Image 1 (cartoon, rainbow, N blue to C red):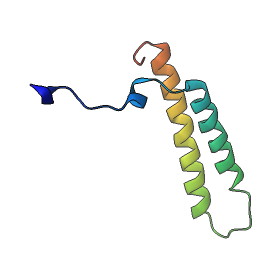
Image 2 (cartoon, one colour):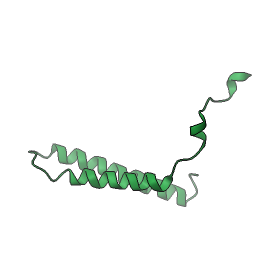
Image 3 (tube, one colour):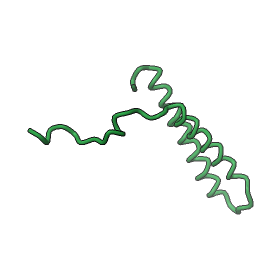
Amino acid sequence: MAGSEPVTSPDQLKPGNRKAGRIGAVVSALVLLAMTIGNHEGRVEDIWLVSIALLLLAIVIGDAVLRRNGLRS
């Protein structure tokens, strides 16, 4: 049957640059943390910025651990 194979585009088959992705995530987290220093009032913005930065770092660390243990290709 023709519909049993998933449809993918050619760019989905080649992997991206892992090192560039990791560097981009860490730089983005540092930029988010730098944005907490500013002239805004209240701490709600700081909580969001720090939370998103920590989430990015957790994803990078989790990916590295999974790859080292052979659970991701």
